[in-house]
Amino acid sequence: MHDPASHSHAPIAPVLAGQPVLARLEGVGIRRAGRWLIRDIDLVIQRGEIVSVIGPNGAGKTTTARALLGIEAPTQGTVHRAPGLTTGYVPQLLSVDRTLPLRVRHLMELTARFAAREVEEALGLLGVAHCADSQVHTLSGGELRRVMMARALLRRPDLLVLDEPTQGLDVSGEVDLYELIRTMRDRLDCGVLLISHDLHMVMAQTDQVVCVNATGHLCCSGPPRMVADHQGFLNLFGRRTADALAFYRHQHDPVRDPAGAAAHGPAAAGQAGEVREHGRAG
Amino acid sequence: MLDDFFTRALIAGIGIALAAGPLGCFVVWRRMAYFGDTMAHSALLGVALALLIDAAPALGVFAVAAAIAVALSALQRIGLLAADALLGVLAHAALGLALVMVALMSWLRIDVSAYLFGDILTVGRLDLLLVYLGGAAALAGLLKIWRRLLADTVDPDLLRAEGVRPEPTRLAFALLLAAVIAVSLKIVGALLVTALLIIPAATVRSFARGPVHMAVMAAGLGVVLVVVGLFGSLHLDTPSGPTIVVAAFIAFLLATAWSVWARRRDRNDRVRGGRHA
Image 1 (cartoon, chains in turn purple, green):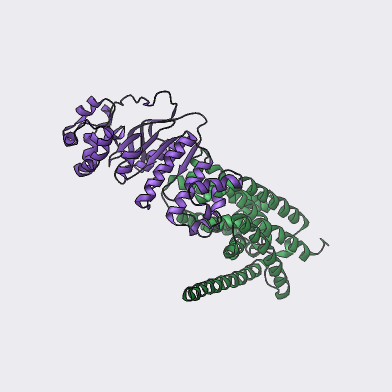
Image 2: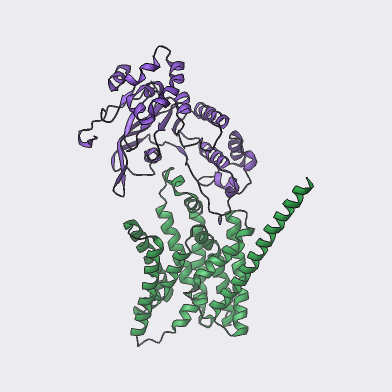
């Protein structure tokens, strides 16, 4: 099993040449109330890159994002953020107390002032311009998430952190949202950290995948097609899922034989060169 | 004009209501009613300590209320008990301690009920100055921390994600509350200060369209309630604090009845509209 004392961190090298590193986690662990929520997490996010964190429920995906943002202080390891980094955070849930009368407009300007025109433009971009004068507690979950994304974009962040942004959206809504995320990435030239359950979308739409297992440890990370071949990923999500994802691998890498995926152990991953190996073999 | 005790009480009461309304909105939004109550309960301890060292009672009240706020955040960090249990311990410990102290200080004749329920006969010119200086300071402080406090009320993580720690803002808010409690003691009394914070805010909630709107309305309603309550107290010969609270409660009932009626009317309109469509 895992022995933290013997764990040595693989050197984490930025993969996009010439792009500055926005934030980096090195061997980060967070312990709360006697329990490790995450442990030995390495992660690099560069400008212009969409990095997604996947893993089962309770694996510490949100905690990883919170560590990166500085909301949670790490118990071990280090968190680096580029000096002067502007972040935009869209939490998974936001519950506004009914006793607080708050219009969407007010919510948009919660932490900083913006011109009304800017606010409306941001809301319009997310397709929720009609909500500008609605009370926040009357919004649906999907509307509120879009409003929160608009709020994050208003800040023109260098790093955009989205916690489960597709929750509660239908398939076409998801596709639109991912397209929007890519557009925002290009327009703002920012890095995006995306937390998601949705393997298909993650594999198809993101540049780097960080896979966390149920014990809060890093299982593997790298470009989607590499991660999809990784034994740890297969253990975590099962063969069936992996086979279903073969489609994306084919798209990206027609030479590879999807049937051979199960045989790829850590050794095979090492061969691939790009996937980063984490945790113990087995 | 200021020679008349009743005029002084009116002016002081208006000043208190103006500061208590906006602060009270945050007490309601942040679900800190019991927190305000605990600080208010500790006020008598502040009075007793101040008299012991021959200082101004308001100063003692402020100091003890502030100490309670700091103690609470320290105890919360230890995290053995939930906040409401901690508040229950602190509130009643402070009140018990104060009553024991007052009983032991037999050389002083303190009218405890005047501090617990307010006594407009005791409002002097110096108190007026205190109310307006303290109240203005509390409002100015609130204005300064407004945006951060509101953001922290909605979701502290939004602040933390932007590199802002919410704790200093929370402490500042607790100190502002302590200041308002300290200056309201003579008019409404320790046991009823929380009512002046909460009831106006709760009453205007269903009419408010935004946080600022609600704060302004709460201040305005508070002024009306204090004036009505003080006149009532004068005519009925009742203690000022409880009379103001009764007036506030009547306003709250009326507002609640109105919003229930308005909601039902809206629903009926919708049903009827649906049939026509």
